[in-house]
Structure formats: C-alpha cells, structure tokens
Image (cartoon, rainbow, N blue to C red; front, side, top):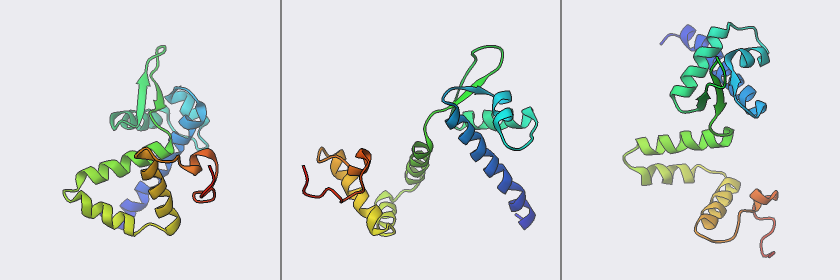
Length: 143
C-alpha cells in the first residue's frame, strides 16, 4: 500500500466515527438522509447509506424499516464497541493466556487497579467504585 492510499482511507475512518457519533446522539434509529443532514460535512446520501449498510453488515448497527426507508441504530455505546473489538482480537489468538499476560503487563497502575476491581466485582466481590461515580481506590476501607 502506498502512502497516498493510507491518506485516502483516513478520512473514511473519521467519517465512520462521525456517523456513529450522530447515531449515539440521536437516541433512536435514523435514516441515511437524517444522518447525512446531521453530519458537518456535505456528502451524498448514497455515501452515507453505504457506510450504514457496512456497519450493519459487521454487526455495529441494527437496522429497521419503520417506513419506506431503512433506519439504523447502534447496537452498543462507544465503550461496548471497543470491548467487542478487544474480545474479537483475543478470540483470534491461539495463545490467549500469553495475549492477556502481555496486555495486563502493559497497563498503567491506575488501569491495572481498575481491572483488578472489575475482576473482583465479576467474581461476586465488592462493586466497582468508578461505576458509582468515584475514582478507583478512593473508597478503600469504606463500606
């Protein structure tokens, strides 16, 4: 791939991100025309429709037909989509333990502490403070 190809693809990734932002902000399904109208840049409706169809094909968007036009809505918020990407990457690797070990060893101290608290909560331990609006570790010893 030549350098010009990479530059040509970068705006597409940005456009996909903008489309997802519009859909997350909408709070409900939108048609390609509605997404096009909400975007800051001028685009053809067919360009937006193609992006929406591809996001639907890869499982990022749900599609309904409330009227004559198809409408799209995200299946998860930004954090959910990132978690899904992380899970898919892990599933592709044959040595999952090694991948997890390398991932954990690359975490900052704060992220490591948050991960420990999340794992503890998943095992039936105390809840994760950040879910309640506080920083991890700031309520240690408090019940």
